Amino acid sequence: MMEELSLHIMDVLQNSLAAGARNVELEIEEDVERDRLVIRVKDDGKGMSPEELKRVQDPFYTTKRSIGVGLGIPMFKWVAEHCGGSFRMESEQGKGTMLEAVMRLSHIDRPPMGDLVDTLLGMVVSSPQVRFVIRYKSGKGEFVFDSREVKEILGDVPLSSAEVVGFLKEYFAENLGAVMEAA
Ligand SMILES: Nc1ncnc2c1ncn2[C@@H]1O[C@H](COP(=O)(O)OP(=O)(O)OP(=O)(O)O)[C@@H](O)[C@H]1O
Ligand SMILES: [Mg+2]
Image: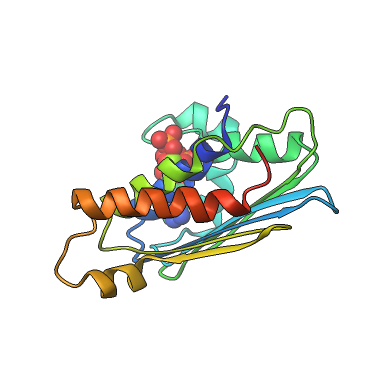
């Protein structure tokens, strides 16, 4: 079992990239009053047929097949449902996919967020051709990041250059760190 939510998030984002997405949106909402944590990812990748969508969420099906089909989704689904929440996926072939995991923030088994800053930074700089929009909402405020805006500002300077990575790391740590409440 993955001990950190950032690892589940990384897996889901990697699935979006593997599906050829050009646009990936990640939304995280912490609602302390309603004791809810929502993690949502939307992409415009190749999507899945209704049968595929059912199959990838079924842990037994995946273990039986085990040909290039992992357990990333069934594990994330299990964690969400086990932690007093819910899990749902919607997908349309040729259009894209949406995944939403909800958990109770205070559930004793809710995994900690983990190193979200490094996880997201790694994704963004290693796939500069993909537009990432990241939104993190909490009682402390909202953090919004759009990799396209950063690329426009950078011009010819690659997103993966050492200075840019260093700057983004600081920017994420400061601004994303400021709104993150859940440990
Ligand atoms: N966003 C997505 N768009 C299209 N297909 C997807 C998406 N997410 C998952 N899938 C399909 O579901 C399958 C299962 O995903 P899952 O993350 O559970 O395992 P995996 O990515 O194959 O392996 P692992 O995550 O264990 O390395 C993927 O191989 C892919 O075919
Ligand atoms: Mg995966």
